[in-house]
Image 1 (cartoon, one colour):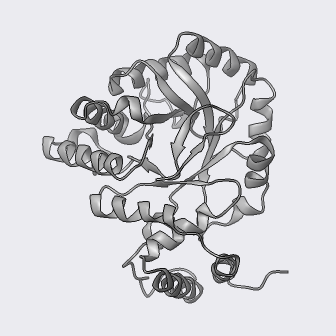
Image 2 (image 1 turned 45 degrees about the vertical axis):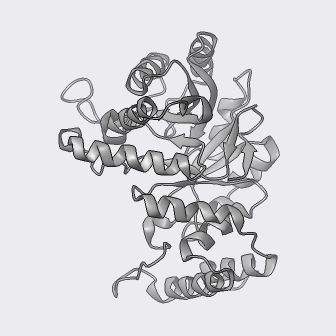
Length: 314
């Protein structure tokens, strides 16, 4: 798989990332059986063998069990840690943490950031996190406090680079203004069913500041994927079906699956979007990697865009 730099860092990533949110098959840690953990490890190995080198996870995914699954994989596959990048996220706190009446909330306090780093390192069984994201914008975000926390964990060798997730351009700018080093990525929902980042300044800012956009749910929760059909009561079904028809026609031209074309469409953008592949099925993980070999023409790219928009350009 081809590679690219993450932001203005020296970190080199594959053009697609493997995201392990679904890897253990549940959000309830009590349901993670040895069989489910073994399947999760096999999914990670499939991604590694297919050329993925950026592995994305988060502390909230199955309350840490997905980080543990990645850590278990590293223990099983000799040399893997030295050949991949690990990205994780913190900042979302569940209701009931730590007190019974604590609400679901976002927390970018220095205390929570530093505690989260320690927890993640323990679950992964590693000494350093390559990319550490703030997960969702905390409206009480204090950039100087965050900068101080980032500096402490970086100076201690616990984190190499920092990034954000689901941040608007203004939130990125506010935080970056107080950091002595550049944010390397912004992970946002980008796909043919959600085109806002192309027009709301998100991708423009990524190009301007050399921030790598990471696309979560690049197949729109799966409905853009190969073999999927829309239910009769699907919202905006007629327009969505037209998009699938255009994707299928383009896939036939290239001799690949619809999944591959939907991902190749993202890869074409000059901001260098990295789609995060979230399947736990090895065959799907391998198929998605083929997107790296497809270079859509401008006509193909715009034909797909127009189908996704459901209307002509201005």
